[in-house]
Length: 445
Figure 1 (spheres, rainbow, N blue to C red):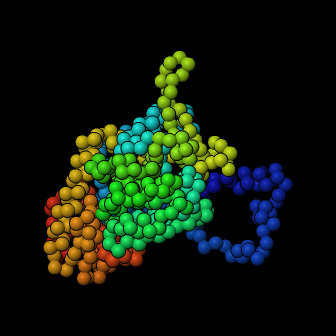
Figure 2 (spheres, one colour):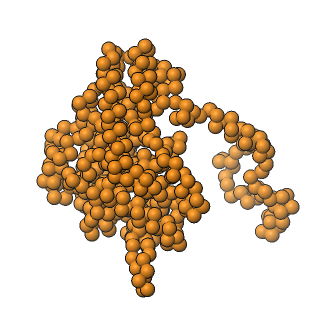
Figure 3 (cartoon, rainbow, N blue to C red):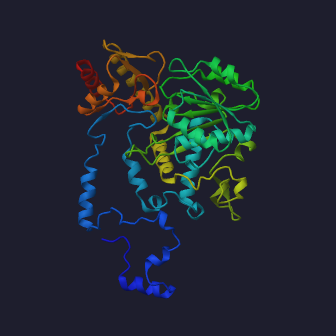
């Protein structure tokens, strides 16, 4: 089945119309040195039936988390997604507006985004939130460049307790802005505030912190905040887990200036790796508002006094002069933001708190069980929320492979980022029986 459906007669008619004998004549300007002499090694087209069978065979190679126990986290988490989310987002008026370029045309889409922004502000304690970003990593990177514009400084303090993937994205964005990155190394699974005090100065634009950090530990946020606030221009950027903000203190309460994070865990599911949802919020100040990337939905009234929703700010290059744009983000993750809005509305304050408490208590139950095994140790046993670092005398890769053979994904191999141990995550979905099964398997391996 050809992808392009033009018949030979139609092709000849088009060529005749433009005065060309063959399609190849259109490419005569390409030098022979860069022209392939042979045909491409591509198989001929197949029928729709054959295509579907091929796709199904490939799909069967995947295994879903309905078939495996997952203790994998490191930035994406296996939380329960209430059935109401799929039921509502599958409505055509929502589903077709996945990333709406002209959201002004739909009051329903605008209202959903407005509610999403309000909920993100409630979670973070911030005064302003945008309509969403592409994912947590790009949100963090955008926040760093935003902080540099506000402070008019170029130095960024970036601890190694921040998600390594986010660190890479931040540095990639920052390279084009000529930002200077100071890598802060931790000796344990949390940062020593003295590291920040020794490196911060009048040229520091922003200090980046994760809450909880990549290893699941809680940094000394209050102490670090006091150090940062001594420098008038330096901003405090917090990358937060939104689920856990139902239990933990809001970043605004310890002086955060900008709060970002990954909201995949608010109803989007894992979906084999995406799409994700980045959130971004900041203090309610004019200098912050004008530098916030993306778009913001606001509520207003028309000349007849009727309530309506509008795009009140769009500092992206499609709407203002390119040199004035804060970012080249083209739109927002509207469908995933809607999922987060439905999730937060469904769970409510108490439900979100309950999820966070389940994650905490179950993770600590599992950590204690593992720590009691002779060949294993939890290195941040006295400081973690729902993720912890497991160290073992055994070979990490071999342990992970053996447990995978038993349909258990034990966690993320930290050797991939030059660290020791395995990062284990526990969500509210894991039962006592499932955690006990993991411990039993580990004991006999």
